[in-house]
Image (cartoon, rainbow, N blue to C red):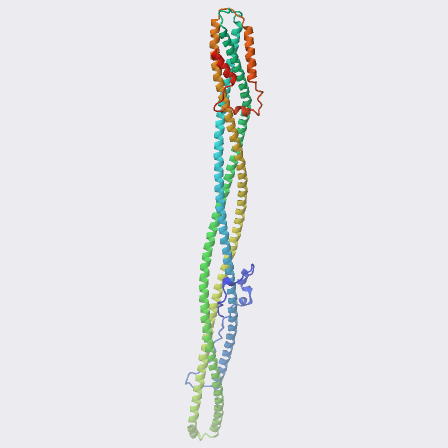
Length: 586
C-alpha cells in the first residue's frame, strides 16, 4: 500500500485522551495479533525428470510426475494469494498507525509549545519579583536613613535638654544669690541708725539706694516669674522627650520588623531563584530531550522513508513477480495444453504400439519387413520422448521461478515487518516524550501557582509596609515639627533668661556699690523708715500698674512660653528700663 502524502501533523485535530499506549500493543487490533505470514515452501518434489534427449522408460510415470508438479504449483499459487491478501491488510494497518503517530507527534509539539509559554511567564514573574525585592530594599534603606536622622535629632534634643537644664539650674543659683544679697541689704538697712543727721546723709543717695532696692525686687519678681515659667515648661519638655524616646524605640522596632520582613523577602527571593534555577535546569533537560526526540524523529522519518522506499521497491518487485507469475501461469497453461496434446499423441502412440504389437505377435516372420516399417515409428517415439522431456524441463524451470518469486516475497515481508517494528518503537518513544512533556507541564503549573501565591503575599506585605511608611513619615514630620517648636521655645527662653541674668547682675553690682557708699558715708542720724515705706509703696504701685503679674502658666501654655526663647531680639520691659534709667540718673 502506498504512503499517504495528504496527511500532515499540523492538519490533524487532537482530542484529549484519544490515544493511549495500548494503540501500539499487539492486542490492539486483529491484524497485529495475526502477525506477518511467511511463505512456507513445499517439500521438494520427488520427481525424476528425464534429461533432454534421454529415452523415456515409462510414459505413465512421466504423466504422474506432471500431475504432481501441477498440484504443487496450485498449492503455491493458493499460498501466494493468501500472503498477498494478508500483506495488503498489514500495509493498511501500517498506514493507520502512521496517521496515529503523526497525531501523537502533533500533540507532543503542542505540549512543548505550552511548556515554553509557561516557562516564559515564569521568567517574567521572576523579573517582577526581583524588581519588587529591589524596591523593598530601597524602602528599607530609606527606613534606616530616616531612623538614623531620627536618632541624630534625638541626640540634638537630648543635648539641648541638658543645656536647658543646666541653664535652669544656673538661673536658680543666680536667683538664690540675688535673694541672699537682697536679704543682706535689707538686714544692713534694718541695722542702720534710725535718725542720721540730715546734714550728713544726702537724700539723693538714699533715694538711689531705695530705687536700686526696688529695681532689685522687680528683677527678683521677674526672675521668679521666669523660673516658674521654666519649671512649668520643663515638665512638658521632659514628657515630650520621653515620648520622643518611646517613639524612637517604636521606630527602631518598626525598622527591625521591616528588616526582618526584608530578610524574609530576600530568603523567599533566594528560594524562588533556586526554584527557577531548578526549573531552568528542567527546561534545559526538556530542550535536550526535545532535541533528542527531534533527532530520533528525524532518524525514524529517514528510516520510515527508507522503509517506504523499500516497500515501493518491494511492491514493484512484487508487481514484476506477479507479471512473471502471470507469464509463468500462461506458460504453464501452454505447457498443460502441450501436455494434453502430448497425452493425445501418447494415446495415439499407445494405440499404434498396440496395433504394432498385435501385428508383431501375428507375424514374426515379417519382422525384418516390419522392422523396416518400424523405423519411422521409432523416430516418432524419439520425437515424442524429446517433447515430453522438454515440457518437463519447462515445468521444472517454472516451478523454480515460482520458488524464487516466493522467496523474494518473503524477503519483502520480512523488511516490511522490520519497518513496522521500528515504527512501533518510534511511536513508543514519542509516547514517552509526550508523557514527560505532560509531567514537565504539570511541574511548571505547580511552580507557576506557587510563584503567583508568593507574589501575592509579597504584594500584600509591600502594601502593608507602604501604609506603615506613610504613617511613619507623618509621625516623623510631626516629631520634627514638635522638636523644632521645642527648640525655638527653649532658645527664646534661654535668651530671655540670659538677658535677665545680665540685667540682674548689672543692677546687683550697681546697687551693691551705692549701698556700700551710703553705709560708709552716713555719719548722722535720720529716720528714713517712713520715706522708704512711701517710696516702696509708690514704686510697687507704679510697677503693679505698669506690668501686672502674669497668671499661673498652664501646661498648655508651656510651649508658648518656651517659643519666646529663640526670638532674635526681645525688648526689655518698660518698668525695668525706667528703673535702670532712674538708677543711672540718681
